[in-house]
Image (cartoon, rainbow over all chains, first blue to last red; front, side, top):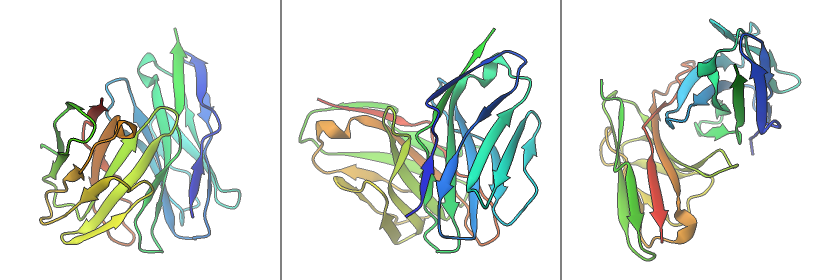
Length: 116
Length: 115
């Protein structure tokens, strides 16, 4: 069974600095997708960035980028120029594709605090 | 755009009561799913569906039933509520299809308390 591990329950970053959130996963599949979601205090789940496993190029979305290491099964999120509005819970998620089950597996989350 | 609509937003039940959490989406998404979110445990998949008439169990299905009679609706039923089912529940939907990296769209959640 696939698993997703976020080993940092909480992280802090100074405003305008850079922070990296870690995510590792375990799977025997070669075809899958990875996502980072943000959950602010409003409880909404907001997509931050996504990565296809078959793409070697790391995804970027403005200040957010990932470091996808397929062999190491690692999918970290880098937030540059951190802003107060980035403070939230961040969840890493895996979605299987090849097996046809289409299950999404979420990590336990990392709470990011942004210090002014 | 309504997206994914969950009702109610809050609910308090007594142990043993039954209830249905409603979820509707207007994006013609094939995939719909239910999660529960508990502190320190992330989102855990309860049930999911890949189309009308097709449902399957997720990681924590016990105590919950689902059905998918239409593409738009995916209700979650608690037949006999237990305090262990106190949680925040999220419904989500997405398109499916090989090669499509479609993220899930989430509802705003339902905070459910079982006394």
